[in-house]
Length: 117
Length: 113
Image (cartoon, rainbow over all chains, first blue to last red; front, side):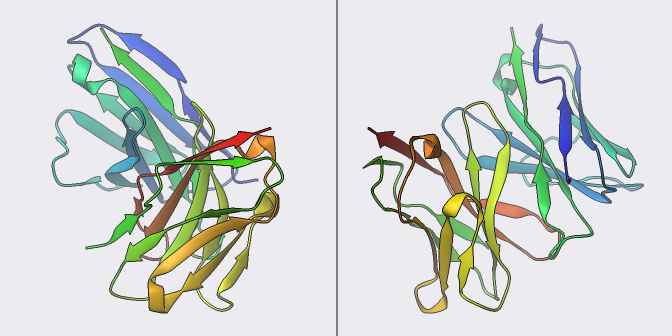
């Protein structure tokens, strides 16, 4: 149990276009999901906390108008990278906090590799 | 602010040898501590976690970790490494129930036969 999926796994887009990444908790409901960004050979950096039914909370330095987060249901959060540029190329990983586990343990998706050309 | 330090960027061990990955944290209260493993191009898998209680925590795949408050450490250990353990390992500290995680820089483990 406790599976989180992400779609797509890889995406290539042209500079200036927008890309949407989906994060789904498949077998549990998650009121809180998180979006991380991972640069090559670096650690994960939290971008934002996504709460179902309310606005996302962005970390300092993350442009909320560029990285739009929507958490419209208890099993789905989306990250839209608007007007993408090559510097947005990265590995994006989401996680979902499982309310049925001790400490609301986070389960991670497999990640989405975004390449902007 | 919370922070996590993994002092070793790369570690190479022989298959069958023991392993210890170091993790030090900075946090004002009782921390929630985690170890995750990431294979290339993959998401993260939880190895083990510490919230409270016994300071020696057993995880999956034969891993264990010991919480030492006096040293602000949560080192990961395995008595005998297998080639399939080659991956990147991340230590993380959380602010509590379902709250955000702060990750260390990661340690890349290479296993030589």
